[in-house]
Image 1 (cartoon, helix red, strand yellow):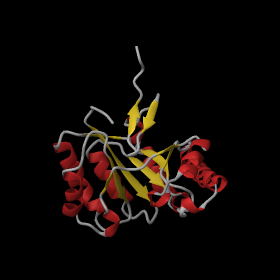
Image 2 (cartoon, one colour):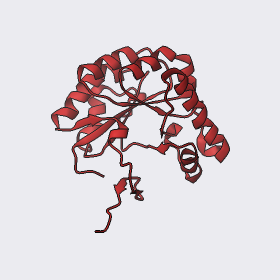
Image 3 (cartoon, helix red, strand yellow):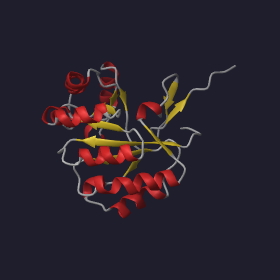
Image 4 (spheres, one colour):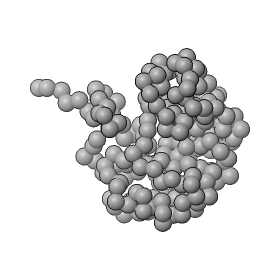
Length: 208
């Protein structure tokens, strides 16, 4: 919830790394930084891609270790999923992750508690491009065009049919609407905040 014309572009990484170079080139061309949510298994398999993302100055978030259905796991198992992925990222980048996005967008009280126990903030999204379903650039933009607003968090994935080739046009369109694209950590509140029933983060105003 913000008055600033800022949105975040987030890219989940769980499948392959074939398009990472093109994605990074496009982000560099537009001089923007985004947040990549990576799965631990993907990190192990594509260490060079993780290095490139990190060295390009993008933010790396945690998307679990093995991408299970986390609502079926216990608190301890959920904590382990987050910590294992974070440790793998730290081995490559030197930094632990601090943001967590559950696989499949699943969450419940246990998952939120696990994120907190593992010193992570849970992050969902407000706009889904459905790029993983093979949507074209035009179809993806149609899903964003009328709904994008201050504070929007946009979900994309690498390793899909059209994401990498559509990114340039989608970023251009977002900018043309007057929005600045920032990393999640530059969008969310760090101080006293609450999350409403729609999952919107709101700053708690202190009484004078």
